[in-house]
Amino acid sequence: MVDTKYGQRKVTNITLADASDGIDLQAWGSPVKEQLQEENCYRITDLIVKVYDDKKYLNTTSNSRVTAIPDMPDIVNKTVETRETFKNMTVTSIQITSKRSCSVCSKAIETEPNENLITIRCLSCNFKQKIQDLPVKVQATIYLNSEEGVQKKIQANNHVLTNFLKTNDKLHLIRNTDAFEDFIIGQSVFDLLLDSGNLISIEPVIRMSSV
Ligand SMILES: [Zn+2]
Image (cartoon, rainbow, N blue to C red):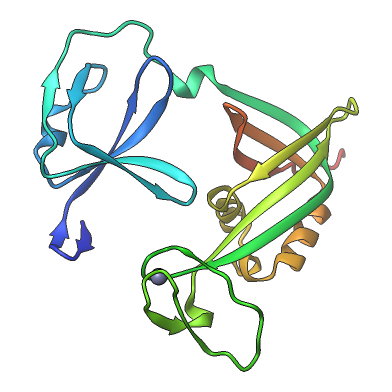
């Protein structure tokens, strides 16, 4: 259940795919969810696209209607066909940038660091809020080398970096990009999982000491 301005609504996450790609659908309290069965094909009307953490989601609206259609050929099996793994990659250089965003409308807030400033007004939605409470979004550009000397440049979005910090119990580094960069360079060796060229996860390689 999720609290919305219309009260508590139930949301269900469903993954959809067509011949070119896959996308997650958030079905809001509507009968849409009950009409969908895995592996079947449907036409769904009046969906809207929303973006959270740099990822696109389809959302149902109160006008969304579901019609079953005959099976389509060539449905993308996203998790199987487009994922690539790069093992034992060494980080050679990294740059992490962070942006504060509005806690009301999620638009980026450009604030110059100023110790006297405690609150700020969002120029998009006009709500005033405490600077220290603003959500922070980070992005990284990372250069890595494979053991064979092949260089790879990757972009890591907020979602991937936040998951990385959570699994390594270092979430506090999200507000200290300098220490975050040092932490990644200090880990040195990583396994990368990419989907259609986009970074899905970055895992430090634990070197087992030989006995
Ligand atoms: Zn705002």
